[in-house]
Length: 107
Image (cartoon, rainbow, N blue to C red):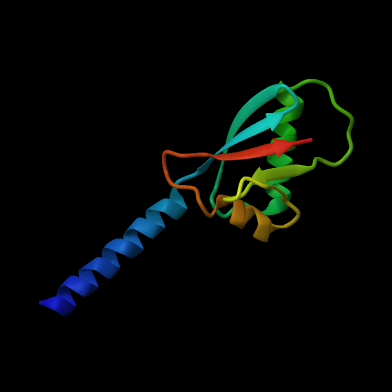
């Protein structure tokens, strides 16, 4: 009975993890005085995230120069951490749970 319960717990945990991975990440983007919201797949790579954020800002935000975007997130200590790679994006998304959001700060 114990091994069956253990197996069922593992299956349930695996199913829960797969569901969380399939749920898009809600990303709140702070840019100057504006706030935008986008949704991206959990497995989004750095270049794709920056492209999506830049597109949203161009479509909805104030005019800006065409220099590279500097994207940051607040870590668990409250420090602003720069995103520079897909690994950084995954670290930012690590705490995401369905029903919550990830907040990015863009300059």
